[in-house]
Amino acid sequence: MIPVRRLYDAFMNELKVINALFLALQNIRFYPPAHSLVQESITEFYRALQSELSGRNDFSIGFVEKKLMINGQPFALESSQIAELARYFEILKIDNITLQAGVTPSELHSFLGCLAIKAEDLDRSGGIQKALQDRNLKHVLANIVLYGRIRQEAEKAKEKQQKQTGEEEDFIKALRGSGRQFYAKSPSAPPDDEAPPPAINEGKMPSDEELRRLYAIRDQYDAELKRRVEEEAGRYKDEIKRLTFEKNRIDAVMRNVGEGVIVVGNDGKVLMANPAAEKLLGQNGERIMGQALKDTMQKEHALILSHGNQESVEEIEVAGEDKDTRRILRASNAVVEDRDGQTIGMVSVLSDITRMKELEQLKSDFVANVSHELRSPLVAIQKNLAVLMDQSPGEMNGTQKEFLSLAKDNLDRLTRIINDLLDLSKIEAGKMELKKSKTDLVALAHNAVQAFAGWFREKDIVVKLDLPPAPLELEVDADKITQVLNNLLSNALKFTPAKGRISVGIKDSDPVEVFISDSGVGIAAGDMRRIFNKFEQVGSHKHNGVAGTGLGLPLAKEMVEKHGGRIWVQSEVDKGSTFIFTLPHES
View (cartoon, rainbow, N blue to C red):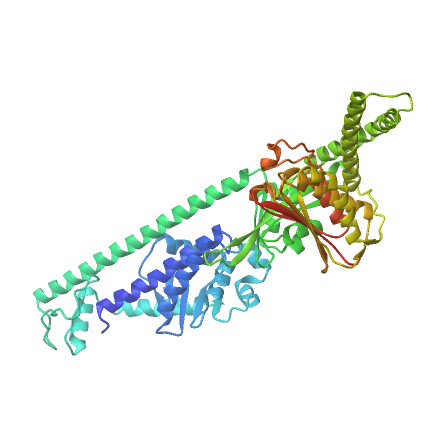
């Protein structure tokens, strides 16, 4: 006869598997498959199942008239979790599920995903057996036509129980047929080395005292079993309440976020999408959930989400029926990692920046128009000043010449600012054309430095040239590259104190690198991304008394990129900055 303690342990192990199955199923219904709570509950289910499979080849779960059957035998406990599982099985038309030895956590994950599918969707796809076959789950079997076999086994068990005349006769027969001493332990059993109760003589009817002791042990076992089951059930109820609360809170936040939020798994399928994202993408959330981007979204929508780096911001124009319905979306992408640092997906925050782009365009058009209108009167003023300084109308004294010279310098500066504004407007509108020709980059650098020689001497700045000894010819627009060099040299001159150092160098590599270094005030790390923005004056630059428009670096960046190169800065506060830009050998 099987000892009571062994029966109790087997019962508790089976209960642990059922509870772990129920919790994992609830989590996978509430959360995306990659969620940490889903992963943890599946791991717990796998561990509990492995304990059961250690001594057998398979573990089966089924229901007969909403009564739980484990490995073909009735399970002597009813709970809300078991009732909920029975409802799942009934809705999905599942009679019996068998988990075989060798089943893996990934197979359990896929198996639970099948159970979480809506019944109507499961029916349309061919039922639970077809779903398991499509996922190639070799160690998970589903049965939908074996009610008869389970009922027969249940009836056999019932007939066997009916043959027993009652609890007293059951105990007496067990005692008579044991042929050995009977020692029953309660669920909170004493250690194995504790002395057992007195043996009952073989072949004799137990006395009233012995029967009372056996009944007392049975009652104690039942009470302890009930307490343990209630504790386990309570713990899982509390966990389900917590998960439900957390899910509702997350859902509420997602529904009310103004920006669109989409979570995409490693397999390219949409795990989550809030209402704002559905509206921006013109999709229905239920239709795109669990589907691949390429299958459910327009090409431009899929590109904006799938081309993101670990941290990237992408913009794309989405065509509409007419000019008024077109939109511009910005997607800020970031990877999602688990606790082990493994990438499990990507989250994208979508923003409709159509209105902002329209305002930027209006501003650019306004600046371009104003700059263009100012250029004509400035040219006239320049010519008049040139005539006056030639003294053609008459002789001027020294004071008059000095004032005219200051006026000319300021007029030239204003002209450069207007020209910069017009150049930026042309680049943004795609109207700037490069007039490329074979040009010696070394000669351009020499000439640019020479143009600033007077200012270098005025501030007693030491200039070092690190240029190739031979000419370096590239297919570039000489005027535009000269403008880039002038802007960078002007920047270095402004922010380098007297008796400082400026270096200009060219590295003949592929692509060619040009650098301009200074020993000036430097740039803070947080400001380095902003210095290439239009009209931006960052950090100490805007507080050191140096005037500027914030157009030189943005213009240099646009012109370098127009040539197929790129520009960046390396800097440290109070130690200087190095601006580097590249130009390809081939146009």
